[in-house]
Length: 236
Ligand code: GLP
Image 1 (tube, rainbow, N blue to C red):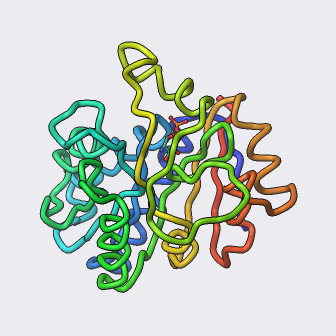
Image 2: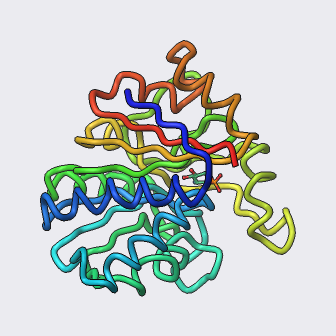
Protein backbone atom coordinates (compact mmCIF):
# COMPACT_ATOMS: atom_id res chain seq x y z
CA UNK A 1 0.00 0.00 0.00
CA UNK A 2 1.15 3.52 -0.75
CA UNK A 3 -0.20 5.98 1.81
CA UNK A 4 0.45 9.53 0.62
CA UNK A 5 -0.22 12.51 2.88
CA UNK A 6 -0.55 15.91 1.23
CA UNK A 7 -1.20 19.34 2.70
CA UNK A 8 -4.22 20.54 0.76
CA UNK A 9 -7.36 19.39 -1.00
CA UNK A 10 -5.99 21.02 -4.16
CA UNK A 11 -2.86 18.88 -4.03
CA UNK A 12 -4.89 15.73 -3.29
CA UNK A 13 -7.17 16.46 -6.26
CA UNK A 14 -4.23 17.06 -8.59
CA UNK A 15 -2.44 13.85 -7.55
CA UNK A 16 -5.61 11.76 -7.89
CA UNK A 17 -6.42 13.29 -11.28
CA UNK A 18 -2.87 12.63 -12.45
CA UNK A 19 -3.11 8.96 -11.48
CA UNK A 20 -6.42 8.63 -13.37
CA UNK A 21 -5.02 10.57 -16.34
CA UNK A 22 -1.99 8.26 -16.44
CA UNK A 23 -4.35 5.27 -16.55
CA UNK A 24 -6.34 6.75 -19.45
CA UNK A 25 -3.17 7.61 -21.36
CA UNK A 26 -1.65 4.16 -20.80
CA UNK A 27 -4.87 2.35 -21.76
CA UNK A 28 -7.27 4.60 -23.70
CA UNK A 29 -10.07 1.99 -23.62
CA UNK A 30 -9.79 1.36 -19.88
CA UNK A 31 -12.62 0.76 -17.43
CA UNK A 32 -12.72 3.36 -14.66
CA UNK A 33 -14.60 2.66 -11.46
CA UNK A 34 -15.90 6.00 -10.23
CA UNK A 35 -17.17 7.37 -6.94
CA UNK A 36 -19.41 10.15 -5.67
CA UNK A 37 -19.32 12.23 -2.49
CA UNK A 38 -17.52 15.49 -1.86
CA UNK A 39 -14.00 13.98 -1.96
CA UNK A 40 -13.76 13.40 -5.76
CA UNK A 41 -15.26 16.76 -6.83
CA UNK A 42 -11.82 18.44 -7.11
CA UNK A 43 -10.37 15.40 -8.90
CA UNK A 44 -13.17 15.51 -11.47
CA UNK A 45 -12.63 19.26 -11.94
CA UNK A 46 -8.96 18.65 -12.76
CA UNK A 47 -9.81 15.82 -15.16
CA UNK A 48 -12.23 18.14 -16.96
CA UNK A 49 -9.45 20.74 -17.24
CA UNK A 50 -6.99 18.19 -18.65
CA UNK A 51 -9.62 17.01 -21.13
CA UNK A 52 -10.45 20.57 -22.27
CA UNK A 53 -6.75 21.26 -22.72
CA UNK A 54 -6.54 18.18 -24.98
CA UNK A 55 -4.24 16.33 -22.60
CA UNK A 56 -6.52 13.33 -22.10
CA UNK A 57 -9.16 11.73 -24.25
CA UNK A 58 -12.07 9.81 -22.73
CA UNK A 59 -13.76 8.75 -25.99
CA UNK A 60 -12.82 5.09 -25.56
CA UNK A 61 -13.19 4.96 -21.78
CA UNK A 62 -16.00 3.04 -20.06
CA UNK A 63 -17.02 3.95 -16.52
CA UNK A 64 -18.85 2.02 -13.83
CA UNK A 65 -19.99 3.85 -10.72
CA UNK A 66 -20.02 2.33 -7.28
CA UNK A 67 -23.51 3.03 -6.08
CA UNK A 68 -26.91 4.70 -6.31
CA UNK A 69 -29.69 5.57 -3.90
CA UNK A 70 -32.74 3.32 -4.10
CA UNK A 71 -35.76 5.18 -5.45
CA UNK A 72 -33.92 8.05 -7.16
CA UNK A 73 -33.73 8.14 -10.93
CA UNK A 74 -31.13 9.99 -12.95
CA UNK A 75 -33.26 13.11 -13.35
CA UNK A 76 -33.36 13.59 -9.56
CA UNK A 77 -30.66 16.09 -8.64
CA UNK A 78 -29.77 14.06 -5.53
CA UNK A 79 -29.10 10.90 -7.50
CA UNK A 80 -25.54 9.77 -8.08
CA UNK A 81 -26.23 9.53 -11.83
CA UNK A 82 -27.12 13.24 -11.79
CA UNK A 83 -23.99 14.00 -9.72
CA UNK A 84 -21.78 12.19 -12.21
CA UNK A 85 -23.35 13.88 -15.23
CA UNK A 86 -22.94 17.34 -13.69
CA UNK A 87 -19.51 16.93 -12.08
CA UNK A 88 -17.76 14.93 -14.75
CA UNK A 89 -19.52 13.41 -17.74
CA UNK A 90 -20.87 16.68 -19.20
CA UNK A 91 -17.42 18.23 -18.86
CA UNK A 92 -15.35 15.56 -20.62
CA UNK A 93 -15.58 13.86 -24.00
CA UNK A 94 -16.77 10.49 -22.66
CA UNK A 95 -19.54 8.68 -24.57
CA UNK A 96 -22.48 8.84 -22.13
CA UNK A 97 -23.60 5.39 -23.36
CA UNK A 98 -20.37 4.01 -21.93
CA UNK A 99 -21.06 5.41 -18.45
CA UNK A 100 -22.81 3.07 -16.03
CA UNK A 101 -24.43 3.63 -12.63
CA UNK A 102 -26.53 1.02 -10.83
CA UNK A 103 -30.25 1.56 -11.42
CA UNK A 104 -31.70 2.75 -8.12
CA UNK A 105 -35.22 2.38 -9.50
CA UNK A 106 -34.88 -1.26 -10.52
CA UNK A 107 -37.97 -3.21 -9.45
CA UNK A 108 -35.86 -6.20 -8.44
CA UNK A 109 -32.63 -5.05 -6.71
CA UNK A 110 -31.23 -8.59 -6.69
CA UNK A 111 -31.60 -8.88 -10.47
CA UNK A 112 -30.12 -5.39 -10.85
CA UNK A 113 -27.11 -6.48 -8.80
CA UNK A 114 -26.63 -9.53 -11.01
CA UNK A 115 -26.98 -7.41 -14.15
CA UNK A 116 -24.39 -4.95 -12.86
CA UNK A 117 -21.85 -7.62 -11.90
CA UNK A 118 -22.33 -9.34 -15.27
CA UNK A 119 -21.77 -5.99 -16.99
CA UNK A 120 -18.51 -5.41 -15.08
CA UNK A 121 -17.38 -8.93 -15.92
CA UNK A 122 -18.24 -8.48 -19.60
CA UNK A 123 -16.05 -5.36 -19.62
CA UNK A 124 -13.14 -7.44 -18.34
CA UNK A 125 -13.28 -5.94 -14.84
CA UNK A 126 -12.17 -2.55 -13.58
CA UNK A 127 -8.72 -1.17 -14.40
CA UNK A 128 -8.72 1.61 -11.81
CA UNK A 129 -11.25 2.02 -9.03
CA UNK A 130 -11.55 5.42 -7.34
CA UNK A 131 -12.97 5.37 -3.81
CA UNK A 132 -13.84 7.72 -0.98
CA UNK A 133 -14.40 6.50 2.55
CA UNK A 134 -17.37 7.07 4.85
CA UNK A 135 -16.92 8.04 8.49
CA UNK A 136 -17.94 4.51 9.48
CA UNK A 137 -15.41 3.00 7.05
CA UNK A 138 -17.84 2.27 4.24
CA UNK A 139 -16.64 2.12 0.65
CA UNK A 140 -19.29 2.55 -2.01
CA UNK A 141 -22.20 1.87 0.30
CA UNK A 142 -20.73 -1.31 1.81
CA UNK A 143 -21.70 -0.57 5.39
CA UNK A 144 -20.15 -2.22 8.49
CA UNK A 145 -21.65 -5.64 9.13
CA UNK A 146 -20.53 -9.10 10.18
CA UNK A 147 -19.40 -10.15 6.70
CA UNK A 148 -17.98 -8.75 3.49
CA UNK A 149 -20.49 -8.98 0.62
CA UNK A 150 -19.01 -9.90 -2.72
CA UNK A 151 -21.83 -9.05 -5.12
CA UNK A 152 -23.54 -5.80 -6.07
CA UNK A 153 -26.43 -5.64 -3.61
CA UNK A 154 -29.05 -3.49 -1.94
CA UNK A 155 -28.20 -2.16 1.53
CA UNK A 156 -29.87 -0.29 4.34
CA UNK A 157 -27.83 2.79 5.16
CA UNK A 158 -26.43 3.31 8.66
CA UNK A 159 -27.78 6.17 10.74
CA UNK A 160 -24.31 7.75 10.70
CA UNK A 161 -24.24 7.60 6.88
CA UNK A 162 -27.72 9.12 6.64
CA UNK A 163 -26.60 11.91 8.99
CA UNK A 164 -23.33 12.48 7.07
CA UNK A 165 -25.14 12.63 3.72
CA UNK A 166 -27.98 14.86 4.99
CA UNK A 167 -25.81 17.90 4.12
CA UNK A 168 -26.62 17.26 0.45
CA UNK A 169 -30.40 17.19 1.04
CA UNK A 170 -32.94 19.78 2.20
CA UNK A 171 -33.68 17.80 5.34
CA UNK A 172 -32.50 14.54 6.87
CA UNK A 173 -35.92 13.04 6.14
CA UNK A 174 -35.22 13.39 2.42
CA UNK A 175 -32.11 11.15 2.56
CA UNK A 176 -32.97 7.75 1.06
CA UNK A 177 -32.66 4.90 3.58
CA UNK A 178 -31.46 2.35 1.05
CA UNK A 179 -28.92 2.13 -1.74
CA UNK A 180 -27.56 -0.35 -4.23
CA UNK A 181 -23.81 -0.75 -4.15
CA UNK A 182 -21.06 -2.61 -5.92
CA UNK A 183 -19.81 -5.32 -3.59
CA UNK A 184 -16.28 -6.10 -2.46
CA UNK A 185 -15.76 -8.60 -5.30
CA UNK A 186 -15.63 -6.08 -8.13
CA UNK A 187 -13.71 -3.58 -5.97
CA UNK A 188 -11.07 -6.10 -4.89
CA UNK A 189 -10.77 -7.43 -8.45
CA UNK A 190 -9.96 -3.95 -9.79
CA UNK A 191 -6.38 -3.89 -11.03
CA UNK A 192 -5.63 -0.66 -9.15
CA UNK A 193 -7.45 1.03 -6.30
CA UNK A 194 -7.11 4.71 -5.44
CA UNK A 195 -8.77 5.93 -2.24
CA UNK A 196 -8.95 9.63 -1.47
CA UNK A 197 -9.95 11.26 1.81
CA UNK A 198 -9.72 14.73 3.22
CA UNK A 199 -10.50 16.47 6.48
CA UNK A 200 -9.49 15.93 10.11
CA UNK A 201 -12.70 13.96 10.71
CA UNK A 202 -11.45 11.16 8.41
CA UNK A 203 -8.15 10.65 10.27
CA UNK A 204 -9.46 8.18 12.85
CA UNK A 205 -11.27 5.95 10.35
CA UNK A 206 -8.22 5.93 8.04
CA UNK A 207 -6.06 4.72 10.92
CA UNK A 208 -8.54 1.96 11.69
CA UNK A 209 -9.01 0.97 8.05
CA UNK A 210 -5.38 0.88 6.95
CA UNK A 211 -3.40 0.30 10.14
CA UNK A 212 -5.87 -1.75 12.17
CA UNK A 213 -7.26 -5.29 11.88
CA UNK A 214 -9.04 -6.42 8.71
CA UNK A 215 -12.69 -6.70 9.68
CA UNK A 216 -16.07 -6.30 7.94
CA UNK A 217 -16.98 -3.91 10.76
CA UNK A 218 -14.52 -1.52 9.07
CA UNK A 219 -15.34 -2.34 5.42
CA UNK A 220 -12.42 -0.39 3.88
CA UNK A 221 -9.95 -2.51 5.87
CA UNK A 222 -10.29 -5.28 3.25
CA UNK A 223 -8.29 -3.01 0.92
CA UNK A 224 -5.17 -3.84 2.96
CA UNK A 225 -5.22 -7.12 1.00
CA UNK A 226 -5.28 -5.37 -2.40
CA UNK A 227 -1.99 -5.72 -4.31
CA UNK A 228 -2.08 -2.20 -5.81
CA UNK A 229 -3.64 0.28 -3.40
CA UNK A 230 -2.87 3.99 -3.16
CA UNK A 231 -4.41 6.14 -0.44
CA UNK A 232 -4.11 9.92 -0.65
CA UNK A 233 -5.03 11.92 2.44
CA UNK A 234 -5.13 15.60 3.16
CA UNK A 235 -6.00 16.74 6.66
CA UNK A 236 -7.18 20.09 5.28
C1 GLP B 1 -21.09 8.34 0.26
C2 GLP B 1 -20.71 7.45 -0.92
C3 GLP B 1 -19.31 6.93 -0.80
C4 GLP B 1 -18.37 8.03 -0.40
C5 GLP B 1 -18.74 8.52 0.97
C6 GLP B 1 -17.83 9.59 1.52
O1 GLP B 1 -21.78 7.68 1.25
N1 GLP B 1 -21.60 6.40 -1.14
O2 GLP B 1 -18.93 6.32 -2.01
O3 GLP B 1 -17.05 7.58 -0.39
O4 GLP B 1 -20.06 9.02 0.91
O5 GLP B 1 -18.23 10.84 1.06
P1 GLP B 1 -17.42 12.17 1.15
O6 GLP B 1 -16.39 12.09 0.12
O7 GLP B 1 -18.45 13.24 0.86
O8 GLP B 1 -16.89 12.25 2.54
